Image 1 (tube, rainbow, N blue to C red):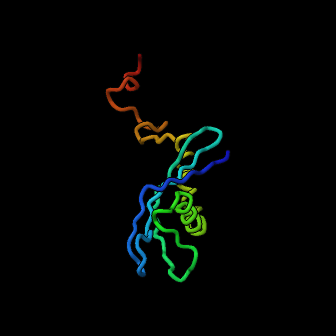
Image 2: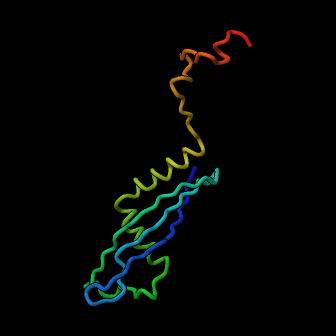
Image 3: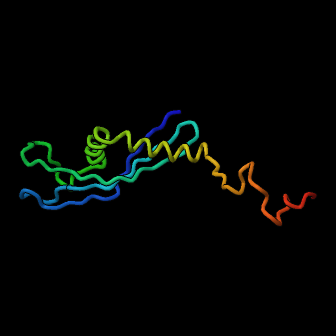
Length: 126
């Protein structure tokens, strides 16, 4: 069982910072994990603040020149380093719940439960 992951970026927040216009300071995203053997998907919705370092020369990409790959690279450097295990565990839980669902049995349906009065089980014959 192997899971492949794909990123989607669905919102950016930009503002003027340190005299630079259109600096991306926040990103909303979705990471989708797909189980290779079943095709089952799980999703994690995330929101990540991004920091602008005006002293880092050569790394700033003007907003109008950004690509999805640029933003996903920023996200990966934060998410994978800081909380990747949490994200992938939530995705795995969703996939497991679909591929191997658990049945919750209520008290009245437990094997040792007394039949409910008036039910067919209570009548003694069918």
